[in-house]
Image (tube, rainbow, N blue to C red; front, top):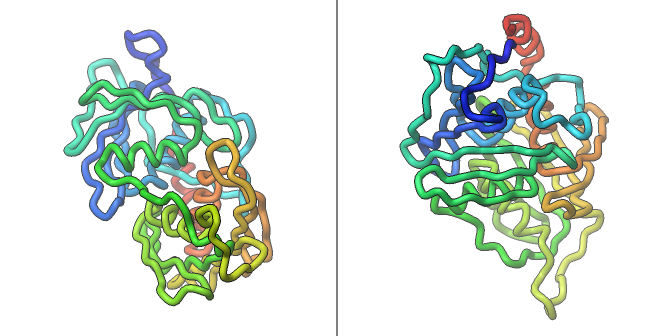
Length: 286
């Protein structure tokens, strides 16, 4: 991909406009626009948005990664072809729900740090991780998590039953809890996992202790695909732990919630046979 010259504003290449059109069921849908692009980039969920922006940041070489993303199989996610813009083609996107201006300044700890501005009210929020950015967008669009404490169960099973064009859906469960909790987006997946993993309120004792702290992820519909995820730390305002892809007998440490999501996306791409499509798409970029 060729990157065009930046716009008339100083450092305009550092800013990305994000138009949000829908947030039904907390499934984030919208479009991305950057001064270097001829066309907007549509996305159907926040994972796809992250993959497209990671590609754009890599092409711009801003912000530079502090570490390389870890990978199961060496696949680089490929988003839509990013075509160079001329000055006449530039515009500001209008979202049906909201418009934001995103400035990711750093990519430390395998996650993002920067500022995001609500272009409708002028409010600016500084975030220290992709997880914090998710929480801000969730609140801004009228949702947000009210989880203060969890069950302290240390282990849960996440069955991914639907996976269509980067969108995950399924349920979260635990052997000590009768009900299965459904999720249809990354926001709901984060919430349901935290309902199990967060500690109990002070003074309450844990009824069932299962160690190590793990999440079993079964991707139904794609043949057997099971991940064992251990969330070991909560540093840098995100999660750290290990993810094991059992069928492939591969285990990798992840350094952020963003890296965990990208590893799961990569595994599904490999199991679904997207490798050839990704390589073919890469060959058409320039």
